Image (cartoon, rainbow, N blue to C red; front, top):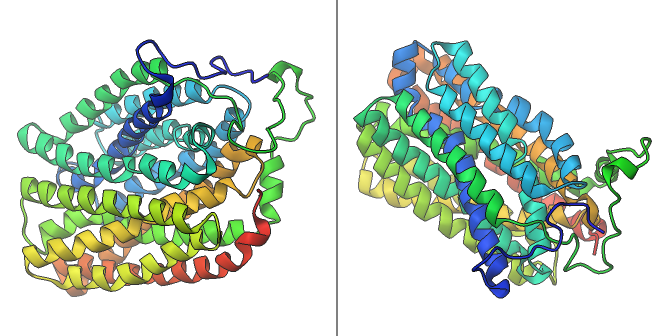
Length: 438
């Protein structure tokens, strides 16, 4: 039987069994909201931090990308291997408390290195926050609902990003940037025990046939059993690499633009901290939620009959998003920019439900956490690690020629990554059916 402490997933007192999966999904969304709130809050605070600590755009880019991605990606696979063998809910509870604690510590930074190390700590905690959740959702929802369930879980990205932008900006304006980190960090720590109380460990492979083989207790497993079984399987599947590299290319632009848009609004459009917090927060929330859900809905509607659709849907979304982003960056009208930004903001996140669902089906049930972690390793090491630094470095390089407008041209150059992502997804769609695990 499953060795997880909560095997069987009995709902807590007061929650109907029929509604429990939805309740679990709601709590997972809140946890993912904290994940991205703590991850993205640095973007809106970049201006005050840069002025207070005397940082360059390149240093801010490293802070928002490499500092976080270094341990986030490196620890993700071993943590996911443990999650395939032990309680995913306990791992996520500890991860939530850890990354929230380091977020609060960011508020005590005195310079580049202290803030860099605190952001690395956030990455260490968040390494255990996503891959186990993907696996939990796959065990709480049947195949015909997974893309939508995973898309709903991914609401945490636009909601968390929007709240990070909004709360970060408003708290920094009312108090200072340090208080913003401390307050959101303490809120995450307070939520960790609530998460553990509600989310129970389900039976693995409950909705999959044939049923997943029982996982023996850690103490009974042979020491020679190789942990990278899922890794070895994925290495032989071209579709995995095309999916991961395609998502990574889109994330270079997605994470980079998300991090630097607040600074762009300040430098090129002259918006105040409060104004750009509200403006960008609404764009991120409205466009992101619509885009994530639309991608998941299309994935569930088209993917079960034609697996290639899981990649063709986001490939088309990126091709439409590119010119919309370009026109939005060019616009000098805030009203027009608002409309133009909402469209690509949604299309930029439409890949989440379909692509994550596809990754879940590249390996057997018992290896899903590791498969998700391998995908996140490639996606975030390249996308998150390179994205924010790329835009900052290009902005610094172009400053002598373009001055305050250098960031605008850095964003222009980064949009080319959407073309790369779309091409890789189209090629991967041709291989996906061959590599699919029923």
